[in-house]
Amino acid sequence: MELYILRHAPAEIQGETWRGTDAKRPLSSKGEKKMKLIALAMKHLDLTFDLILSSPSVRALRSAEIAAKKLRHSDGVRISKHLKIGGNAREVVRNLLDAYPGCGSVLLVGHEPGLSRLISVLLTGQQSAVVTMKKGALCKLTVPRLKYGRCATLDWLIGLAEILALFPSSSHPSTLC
Image (cartoon, rainbow, N blue to C red):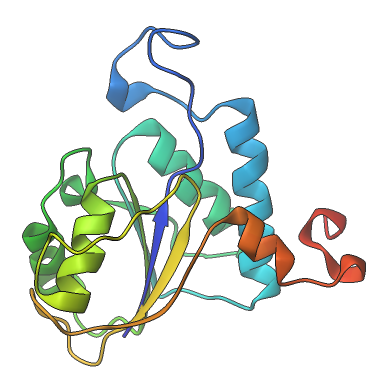
């Protein structure tokens, strides 16, 4: 399995530009633009997914929807309560094993620190490994056989600046709109 893990793009700031509940906090206009560039880069890299699974929070779901649209993912985005804010890595793995066996390429979209804990568990067997997912960061793990514990290899972990640096100026994702 190829497991891609995406932290949602930047959202409105609680208490400054947003006064509603945290789960309903939307992407900021900068976050919308950033996510569109990330999705363009994903398309340019020819990434495809059997499954896109998102946290139910507005900012994560919107990030997943932008990626699905740009990648022409016809199955849409599915929601997992296990990817919610404060989600549990063990439950994410159990959900993937029980509900989505046989998926070859999966994109998970969620939040910190849950995503870093998930990556840490899959790489080392411990939730305490030092991994940080910045907003909009994308990680690729190769997982021969998914389980809760050490089972994956880190292929890459990159942020938007690194994604954009992969492209020569003539094929830069911002010019591909």
